Length: 499
Ligand code: NAD
Image (cartoon, rainbow, N blue to C red; front, top):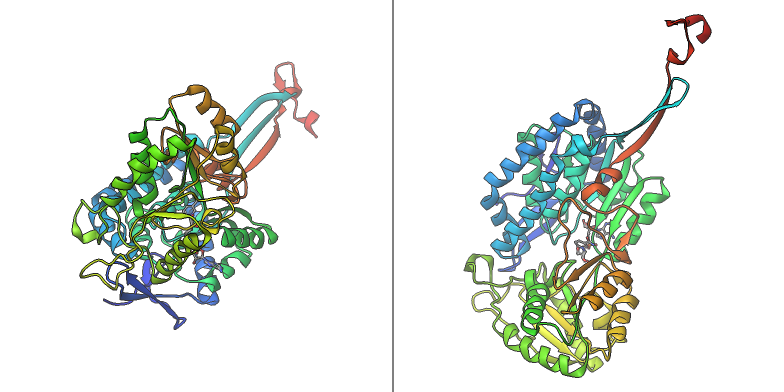
């Protein structure tokens, strides 16, 4: 297959830097093709062209911009199978998971159809003699979106949709691991009626990212990825006066109270801990059963469920539970952390360190693992593993369970499984974490609410999608207007009085 390209000014455009990165099929370990890595000058040109295209797009009324989103919904649905296949082939996730990735992105595009309503301003009539006061939301101009590998459709759509419909142009820097779907989506936006140049896809690495961060044209930066990079992007983008929202890593705890339905809790932990090979920022990676007896019952329910999980390539059909992890480096890192957990004294009660899939020996597969008796001082508890590994930390009481999640440096998502409404309510109210589930393991809010963590899972103050995204991608302008009606004499305007 030939090399991938950038998507610039409405066309797939070959890179000119001479630098490339290999794109793997994680199931086979083979290089499929290469993607170009943009130079600083290629990135600057993409930004400048976006700036030239943006005013025409911003001048279209919001209803017309919303119609592009409406058309986009139809086009994503039309190409769903093709997009899902390309996504699985580069990311490794199963086809149903790839369709879920697209579906959750699509829901934000559907939300964007409401832009005319969401962009309405505020109006105060007669705040003084003949004086009215109103505010309006205007686009920022050109914004950048720097995205992670784990949701190559959903993450770009969550940012590109709201940014565009607010009247901005966007330069997207997708992950260099799986850039095909973002390129395909950019092509679909043009087919949906988006003027060329308003959505630029620049493939690249640090050179392209730093150029975006330092550009005087770029007004806003949305980043999703690991916490150290989120911190770096936030400080560099804000240092040059840009607004920035940077979403980082996670270590999501699921608390299992003694009164929980243990089958339901075990099913939830298996689905949320191992789905997509644990490569989700909302994956549950820590189970916290309250009390020794709860812990024993939970582990007993978890082991047979985990042993039944089927790991395989996306081509093996719908009964595969999860696929490979994204790269060989990710696989080695995950196995390294599992070994560290054993050295640290945690009990590896489901051990698949020698997992091999026949016919796919070079693929990046990692079997499911379960740790018991993990303690907060261990690296496997502190670090985000981002693989099919669930750690169990036994808590002596509800307060201890709450403190564990409260004290962890990450604050993306959490959940409690219980039949006790008081405990659930107390937990939701006191926990310092952005998204909370009550008997729901992955509490991902729908498109018309906002998505975002607290603590080291988020830098900035406005969340992804929902009303916050419209706030992030617009600036408010407030106008105080005085018209001569306050200086009427005898029913006629007295224009002289205005001099
Ligand atoms: P990553 O931080 O390695 O990469 C994210 C993006 O940053 C990529 O586009 C990459 O090219 C760029 N990048 C990487 N290193 C850089 C550097 N030194 N300078 C400039 N740019 C750089 O993250 P990833 O491995 O692609 O994604 C997984 C991470 O994303 C996990 O930590 C996961 O929890 C997190 N994530 C968070 C959310 C959320 O909403 N909080 C959602 C999805 C994923």
